[in-house]
Each structure stands twice: as structure tokens, then as C-alpha cells.
Image (tube, rainbow, N blue to C red):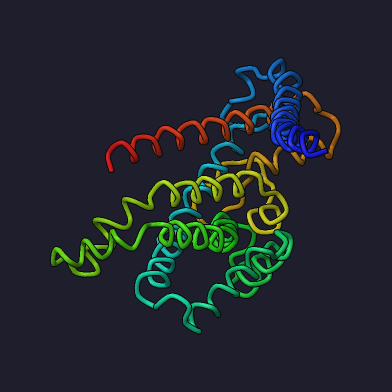
Length: 273
């Protein structure tokens, strides 16, 4: 019985790995097989028309939302995590309150963020369906994720690094910027990549705040569309299934490229630290 249980325990991790890899290959294969045949140069035309369901405005809109969201959320999230770990004192009451609040925000459904963004940014502030409303809403969505991953990455750095830096006469600010952050940078970068993935895949909150107009916003107060919203619209209409599959393939390739780039950056940082 003991030998049989040991064999089962050895096989179970491999079965889990095979199941995970199988599901991943199934999803990726399905999307690429059904989408790549419909990818053609006209899909990357500058303007969306009735006769050409171009995804280029949605691609540019996605990049703009991602860039603005990260510009707002990354400094605030990393700075907050640094304060909580390095300055506020671990285990304090204030830290516990902030951590509980962050975990609560991370568990809120995206549709709630969308309704909040629409009512506050769009109605109360009068920005309507705009790029700024969408970017601010998604930045609030990813802020808890960036804070938590950064906090855990900073806590994972051994205290001997801090003690050694203090022993050499460095102050806290210099220790954090020159010792702690470089050591924690792979984990921080992983959190940022996860945040990008959430923004790229978000649909409900984007439609409520950015809108779903297939054009490139020429300022912060114009509406637009992202790739996920573009794919949703085409699939919902049901008149352009091929273009919907092509958009899904482009979105998947975009995410794979981001993951590959992040892996290379993490390896480069580790080699330099």
C-alpha cells in the first residue's frame, strides 16, 4: 500500500503538468488555427469601415490604455509597497489595514470598476466615455495587483542585504534604491506583466469607461476601443466571425510577445544584479 501511494504521489505532479500544458496548447492552438487564416493586411488599415473591419484602431487604443494605466499605477503601487515594507514597520496596524483594503480591491469584479469609472469619471467629473476615464479605471484595477506583488517581492529579499548595507554606512533610501529594489526587480516586473495582461484582456470596464467606438483617440477626452472590446463587438454581431477570430489571434500573439519580452528582461536583470 505504501509503495502504491508513493507511485501515485510521483505520478500526480506529472499529470497536473500534462493537464495544464494540454489546456494551454488546446486554447492557443484553437485560437491560432481559427484566427491566422483571416489575418490579412487590410485588417491593419488605419481606419475602420463597414467594408473593412480593421483592428488597427483597437490595437492603438489598447497600447494607449496600457501605457497610461501603467504610467499612473506603477509609480503609486511600487511607492506604496516600498513604504509599507521598508518604512511603516512590518505587522503594524496601519500596514494591516492597507493590506486588507488592497486585498478587498483585488477581489472586486471588473464590472463594478466599470460602473464606478462610468459614474465617477464619466458623470460626476464630466469626462464621459474617454481615454482618460478608461485609463484611470484600469489603473485602479491593477493597483492592488502591483502593490501586492511588489510588497511580496520586497519581503522576499533577505534581511541580511539590509543589514549589510546599513553596516557599510548606507542610509535607508540608498539601501532601498541600490540594494533592495534591484534584488526584488524580477518579482516586481512579473507583477507589472500580470497587470498588463489584465488590462489587455479587460472588456466590461473598458466598454463602460472608454466606450466602443472603432477610432484612434486623438486626445485624452475622446472615446475609442481596445482589442478585447473589438473582438467582443464582432463576435456579438455575428456577421464577421473570421475577423473576430483574427482579432483573438492578434491579441494572443500580443500577450505572448509581452511574456517573452518580460522573460528576457528578467534574465537580463538577474545577470546584472
